[in-house]
Amino acid sequence: MSKKTLIAFLVEIALYVLAALTFYQGFHYFMADVDGFKHILKIGPMFLSCFMVTYLLFAYYYLTHQPNEAKRAKTLKANGLGFIILSGLLLVLVIVNLILGNYEFGYVTAIFPVDIILIDVCMLALGILITLKRDWVLANIPVICKEYSTPKRLTVIMRILGFIYTWIALYFCGALLMAPTYIDLTTPTFGHTIPLYLLMLIASLVLFWREFYLAYSKEKEMDKGIADGVRYAALGITTVLGIVAFVTNLAFESTYYISHNLQCILPIDYMTSLNLGPKLLAFCPMIALWINFICSLTIMSKTQKKEATEPLS
Image (cartoon, rainbow, N blue to C red):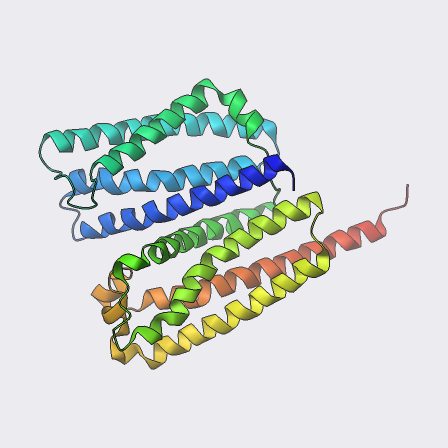
């Protein structure tokens, strides 16, 4: 892997971690006002500012996966304007709420609302940089990997499913990173949550592995045997853990292990007793890996058939 590609790949991981932390925090701001959205003008700028980092992650992902330079330039221009308009508006709303006394310093985080203001200022500055230095940005952010060639309809479906899966993985990655602030090892039902914590990690590793594999396979630096071995191991471990997590959820559903250990990261489950979070963790990483595996096998099979039927030059 070239130095430029490696740096771009590491930047993507760093953005993912930042997006996970802010997405997790933003979701909790959203849940705080979900009952009728009575304080939308106060809470809205808070969670929308947090979700702007996720927007940045998606914009960066597209930039590093789109080989068409004309489309890259057009999308970058649109995103630059998007960052300026959205972050500028959110910054004004946050400052107005601060002047009106709707925000108290430190009542959400130790530096609140300075952290929200910093997010908006950074995103606004980034939008201005992109607008003024678009050619420089395009030249310095390489295409680190290219998506497999798939039918247009399937591409749209997979992209939508990919967005949904990424949101789920981001939330649980943020929850895992914040674990030291809420985890309680002394509860009698803590052991029931261990498969879920492992799947929180695996949900993100599924994304990292796919990006790593595509980037390396593009430059043909990864041994096929090693790549296949890691893939099969990931499939096996994730499938077993998913089944264990699902069975654990069914077996211990009556022990209130979510309210004992996970109420702060699964607020919907705590309020509705749906146990949706454990089911998402049990099935989403497993299904994502199997879909990716089946699609890649189908695409490779078609590619091999095409190469076999093409005349030698």
